[in-house]
Length: 317
Image (cartoon, helix red, strand yellow):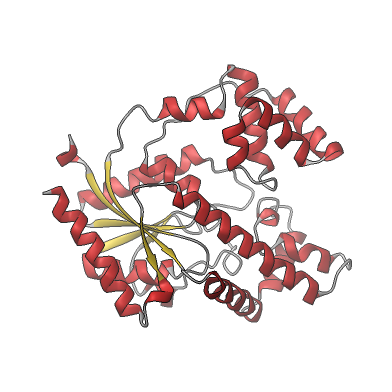
């Protein structure tokens, strides 16, 4: 029943678009708590590279699913959805609203669309075979292989996302079904949420790119190089080393490139990541877009977001 669904506000969008500050203001206005939708902010210690909100930025608003997991621990999309659902149900039971905030499209879609993850056997031998092939022939060879059996999944996965490419191939190998088939079957049960979703974007792409470049400069001032070096030297840092902000600095640590060269590459990779984030969110017809370069102040942006939220609440009645 539609009327029994739990209301959920979601603020999504690319990196450096201002999601955190807007979400905090929305939480203050609607007596809400924030629930992170970021696949890297979940890890302890990865503060600067993942742009974790500081205590000052949180302004006393409770933020869930931030910095609770050791960097060597695996946290699947299915586990994220299970954990986030329980938190949102708890927030709702206390008479408060939940504001989902972040830029990990897969986490967002899986949670809000109530995708159910089918359990299938893990073929470790096959997985190792794929990993060795990636080492000898490159990740592109696996992506090409996936494109033959599941072109839709291949289109949505970036070549750097080797883990998910391997997982998609493994699903086809162990079940005979494609990841795309699985996703379609997993959407049979309706979502428990009535979501009002706002994506922050910029009409002028350079406006967003300038914000990204500035954010990287601020990260460097705040100690990004030292944070990255610590993870590269730690046996617990395997997951962290794959994060944007860390892996681009590795050539500097190994002496292959200058810091300036690595920083320029980091800015470029972050801009590319923002573009991929926007591509993901634009596929979702539920999402309302707000363009940050249309507004001269944060208050104007907040008021526009609240209009969308209140219109959504009125539609429910």
